[in-house]
Length: 110
Image (cartoon, rainbow, N blue to C red; front, side, top):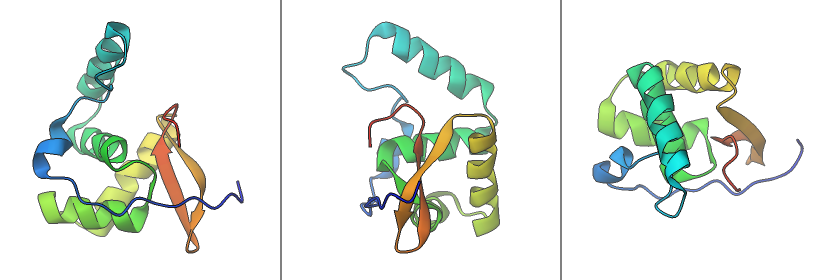
């Protein structure tokens, strides 16, 4: 895991945050699974998972910056929700960028 990954730094609009977890090109089974996962997660975890899907691989710092701008809450709140998603096996570390861990939704291409 010493791989260096370039973290995304763009800021999608708030509308992008509500896009489904599956891509438009994914089969319907992927869309069904994405809806089930989102429905089963607490609200803040679902927001973090969607943000990671929209932004692509990113550091906690980038994630927190984007989410605090749209939803408020503390830095710790968002890092903790990301850590909970790691524990659930939905998010994984894919490397480092500028000394910070980079995270992505598991099974998403880097």
